[in-house]
Image (cartoon, rainbow, N blue to C red):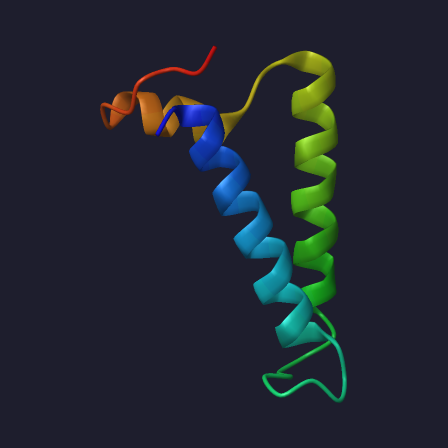
Length: 69
């Protein structure tokens, strides 16, 4: 897996998990503040698409994950 594939995997997982933890009535509901984390991940995805700079990709490359296309 390339670093960009892992970034997308992490982002999608974080969004789904934070929605499950933040939406009242869901099975895993903890607090509506988890929706702020959902917004943070979305904003980070948006800025990385514009600037082509992603902190998670930098971390993954330092861990030895090969770069994407």
